[in-house]
Length: 282
Length: 267
Image (cartoon, rainbow over all chains, first blue to last red):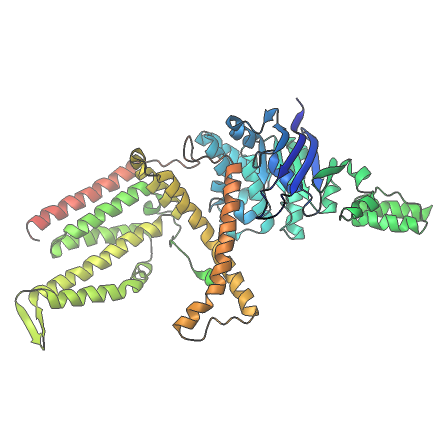
């Protein structure tokens, strides 16, 4: 089986506030995430993207429909630990997911819970810290680290469980641009070098540009799904659901309207600059 | 300003006192306290004091740090001393107004001061040389047998270490909330005690709300990392008693035996 996460007609509603109608956060989501793929899930606030993420390792259980993680139904409680070991989750606030007051102890938390033997924990902790480039901080106190570093520790804590997939639920939202860069570079490297499947939930369009696949959500449904070059250029549709296209696409779109012959799908800044230079020369 | 507060004063180091197993150190401290309370006269106190001095010397902790630890309990020391001085019956030395100071009173007061001071110094030596995590780990294993009578030892240890982990985070948050409230004109520095206490309410309310939210998120994050209680849990750091632990334990047992014998002869 090459799908790590598969949802079928997934629906979910949060318990309503008193005297109000329940709001359905997911209205039938069919989504398949393949092993080794870097998927970005986009959507503005209230689109259901975080709710979807929380279904990917059984933090929330489906109200209707089914979620399979590596072939395991998330509603089967006996498989809970195995599901959470396969799919690790990194959250938004780095402070609220670090458990221990020494970096290496925190990274060891997951394997300790799984009952991994001590020597093996040591090996995994060292390997995980190396993978996120934080090995020199292994004896530091987490509250002395920057936001990006804390988030990398959180990622290391997940890697130490040796998961097949990491879900990042708006993990870059609270970080400054430097911290975001650090986290994104780390995640991308893990995806390329270790073949870990990544599902990155975000509302930053530029983060979507580096994905293999972009899934756009709006009011509980998947509205667009495809490679970034196909999705991020659909300017009007994105605007209609409260998202902005990347700045590069905005610029190229404006130039095209003014009659310059440039392609729309030059997503990165270098690509965009190259495309404009070429158009100006010809 | 609040950031300067440190809790569980721990001075990192690599002395023998630092390298001992935390369990050993907890037991040693208990033995030391028992010996201290069994001591009767100069000779037995001297023996305990000698052990304390050697331990301080080995630990490399600055004696000044130990003395500084006495400051907060200065009042208690004076209070006990005065009470013992005035209310011990015996052979009167001085007598004025309704008070009589007895020879026995002077003695008891003196030994009481000595006892409290040495008690504080000895226990501080434990927290100075043992990191909070090691201390929690040590307590968890030492109290392990209590699990049989359903005392939630693992859970208590987990609560303690998470509390330690969140102290700096919450202090930082308090700082932020204070600045935010000051920016809106809150006044924490003037007024009588009642007014100042009331001024703290707009700090405590948001602090508590955010602490609850944090607790909620942390619980989900812990579950996501497969936390399911202490069952079948392994450890990155395994506590190991080595020869040196047993040797030091033996030394302390000898001290206790010595004190008991000396006290028996009233020394």
